[in-house]
Amino acid sequence: MWQIYGEKVTCGTKGGLVSGKKQSIPTGHDVKSVSNNEWREVSRGHSKPMIANIGEGLNFRRYKLMNVTESRFKNRQLHMEDYLQRVSAEQKEYAEVFDYSKITEKSGVITDYWTNNLLDLILRKENLNGAYKQVKRNKGKGGIDGMQVDELLPFLRENQETLIQEIREGKYKPNPVRRVEIPKETKGEFRKLGVPTVVDRVIQQAIAQELSPIFEEQFSENSFGFRPKRGAHDALRQCQKNVNDGYVYVVDMDLEKFFDTVCQSKLIEVLSRTIKDGRVISLIHKYLNAGVIANEKFERTEVGMPQGGPLSPLLSNIMLNEMDKELERRGHRFVRYADDCMIFCKSRKSAERTLKNIIPFIEGKLFLKVNRKKTEVAHISKVKYLGYTFYRYKGKCRFRVHQKAVVKMRNKIRELTDRNKGISNAERERKYQGYVRGWVEYFRLADMKGLLKTMDEWARRRIRAVYWKQWKKIKTKYRMLKALGMEHWKAKELACSRKGYWRMAKVLNQIFSKKIIAKLGYTSMLDYYLVVCEN
Picture 1: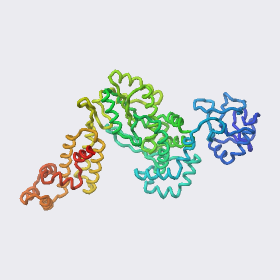
Picture 2 (picture 1 turned 90 degrees about the horizontal axis):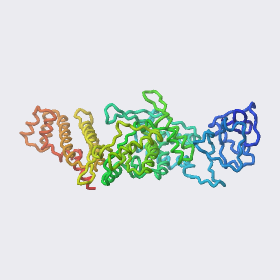
Picture 3 (picture 1 turned 135 degrees about the horizontal axis):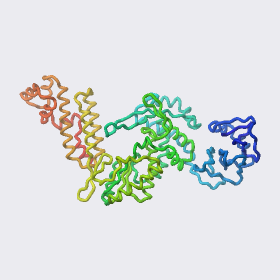
């Protein structure tokens, strides 16, 4: 506890006060106790007289103020001459270190200006503007305050100076995130997302923009998730290379509820090795501890980090980079995309031994939990990774779309082509085209000509059923069939048919052709796949 005695600032113990002077002021005087936050405020406004009173003839800028514990330093004077205080997180004697000044003057200590003054870089106008533009591009729903992305700009114009000042002074308090649960592929399981407010989203994005280039230099070449100019396809090609080199057995690693179980103190420790600006560390810690609003109730978040903010992917990579470095130190071949990691070995025994040896590090050093039910040792042909599965053809590793991904795609197309869904044809065509093209782009590494041909035929039949139902009346059906080029007698016969929508969709196969459906805006998956593969 920092204490103020008149004009003098001293560090107090139970038995007495230790000051920069070689004499102690006994307790029992009219001494005001202040917290560390209050000390920061006081020191900002009265830095010169305080330093003069404390240092008294010493070059105080070379030293750091510190708390002194009762047990080791009771009634003992603090000698500062020719002594440079080394701050260690593992030394229990030093409860806290305050001074943020650069220790470069006559000290011989090399400091990194980039990370020492990181908050100033984060709060630069250019960086904040870039963060706002990125949040606006990403869109998304608002947080607990109800503010949407479209309302963000007027708010920032009016309150930006106050907001920046609060962040600089350490007074800014992030809002709790809004809990959103989305279903996983496994039935009955949900992924818990935390949606920050749009203002917090901008600040997190600004932090991420400055931290990303700093930590990119430290990240492993075998890490591919949430990194610039790297993606799932790069991870898969690396897997393919490892398999072609003979590493056909893998440890398919699954971390149980990674985002919900991250040890915050461990993460802060890892961050502090690189980031020397304590204000940024404090701000990140506030975001981790902001809490969650779930079912209109506040929940504390002393463990884990919210999944859904712009900062979370970067923090996850920073945390898991510790595992990457350990695997590299041990000489393993591996591929990691976010928290999905595969370690490649040449034999099953080697893979089993690797799994047994890496678990103590993950659980004992990183304080993460390995899901033993989902973590397995298997041949590469039995593994699902990023929606793909692997097979060997003529001695080379190739890709297929995993069956679960196919089922998921069928369900999505079934939803988009639902005859009972009350959306316009234009909206349906737009959503269908967007989904199909995105799906094909992601799975373009896989061999799937036969699969896409079958899916196209099924999807076109569903589209015909949608239009047949929309035509409703006999005269409308007759008119539309004639417009498609059907003869009078045949159009009349089909228009009066009492067959169901699904059966009629098959009957219309020839007249309501693939070419016409393509003109309506429904992209053929196979045709688009062939175009993508050629390019």
